[in-house]
Length: 151
Length: 432
Image 1: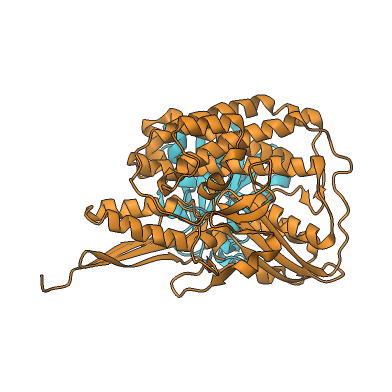
Image 2 (image 1 turned 90 degrees about the vertical axis):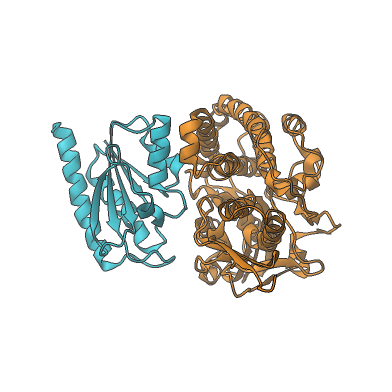
């Protein structure tokens, strides 16, 4: 199983996905952990050939900061506007769209979106997102446990 | 007609560019009266952040300014510091830096040509729509981009924000066999880039030309990448240390990015069209042949054809990478000593989008006293606005949505990196 944290460490709440990845990297050796900026070609490369993939990224959908969204990217696809908070105009939603068109989606692709509030350069994580990082880490641990036990 | 007709064409959030920006074109009584490219991503204050840091930190700190062209920032900053300290990075160390930069050119150009710019020419809203109808085109683009990434990972330590560059050279240099393993991929990259030239040359181009002052680096005997004098099509020929005597940056109220201009003559253009116009005779044989097959002359003045020139540059970068790899001998040590001394230094290299100028002042301990960074998108802002005016005037009869798209395409000709420039884009055409 592969975990991909997406974001920019230097843009406030955009760092959330990377922090979840960092937290779980040392703790779960059975998990392959990658940290990316969210540029589509890199994302497709990162999940190509993997059976099960979890992606964690910051989102901006208008929900209260710290809200956790869980999306099945294979079944439902991703709403394009929500993931614009990535550093580039193209992000996770485009990567899923491209991979679908090219037949390069992994077997399963679960996306955790952490609702951010501030994406300003040079700022640190806001308290609600800081707390959400812990909760998402727990949720990803559960995903890994379910995957490992084959349920 | 008694009543003045005013139309505004605007795009509030420009897609397929790096960063955030908008554009606004105002038309009154059938004439374009005002054009603005608005960059509203907040200024990034990297220059202030650098003050007080150690001179050795510049490659790592400035690499963070951009996820697309970190190598350009590393190379311009390292060059400036090395010049202050009198360190010369030559031979295989220099070749290795050029090789790393080739990786960035391939990666950045492949992204822009196929993912961001090609959809404009084929009437697609995005690369995802392009991929549905032309999956092979997008597959090849991703393959090419991956080869560029592979170079950056091997030499730079990792693909985004490379960590292996240090003042004087590298922390670790690759062994010869590590680079030799890249040969089949790089040979494949030359073929993929040649396909890209054929593909882009077959697109439909708006009939629009302008006489730009082209500004690029020039280094005798090679196509400019990581060093050279700053030259222009109007006869400018200066060392990077003379940059500020000839170029000035100004704040404009509608943009967070400073506008650059030539003190003597105003706007100018840097990037692929300028590099090509001033250096096409230095291209490699396959790149020259690809340019000729694509119907490019010695100088190309249609900014929409920059997509073809970018593809030609990918052929060049892949061939140049092969040349360097085949002639590689592992340098020892991996870096020359760079001992701090008080002074001011300048660096200028060819980022994929155009020249990237850095200037630093350090004290005798190597503490940074001041920093100035002028990215290519800042330099091209005036030329972009002038193109927008020219293109809007020419295509004024088009219905609103098509005109707006044509204007956006005009901006994307420049592959603007708004994140870099602010220190990005929305279209507004006002014709009420």
